[in-house]
Image (cartoon, rainbow, N blue to C red; front, side, top):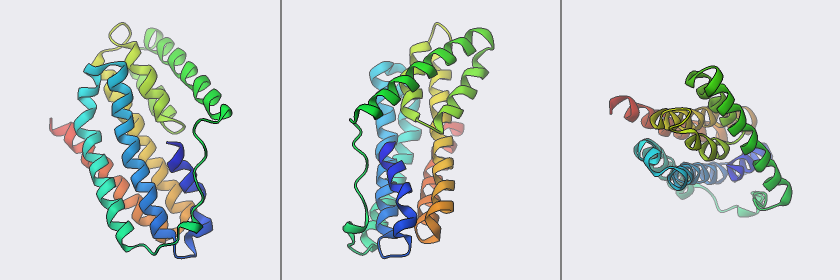
Length: 201
């Protein structure tokens, strides 16, 4: 979710100008893509686990995308105020995700073997604050040897949920009301809708 993180980092700089709504729209679109990317990553690693993610993350993605599109229609054209996100293929970024992935995989495996699946869930949710992709890439590999397939999917969903909550808090705190409030409201609406779908099915 590096593009969303980069967008949040620029929020305060543009909140006083006319690009705050456009920035919120772009951040929501990035969040929608991130949900779909998580489904794709898990589907590549463990297709059966992705079935658990498709409905809740798909619904969250739709809500974020529709919200972003609505905000974009209202936003003033001020593309110059929004800086481009970091290049996701920079060497430092690649090394960072590789190290994080290895750490998450190792800690999750040890936690699952020594402390049980609840410990894996705790590792996943905390890691979600830094990078959901690392969770999506590592936890499905632990099923079914260390944890159940459904539990691996639940841990990924928990990581996504915490990430949405954290980014919403960052947006309101750092970006101000004009950027943060619509971003947080729509992001949380998507996350809550996905969570309700999980509870009802």
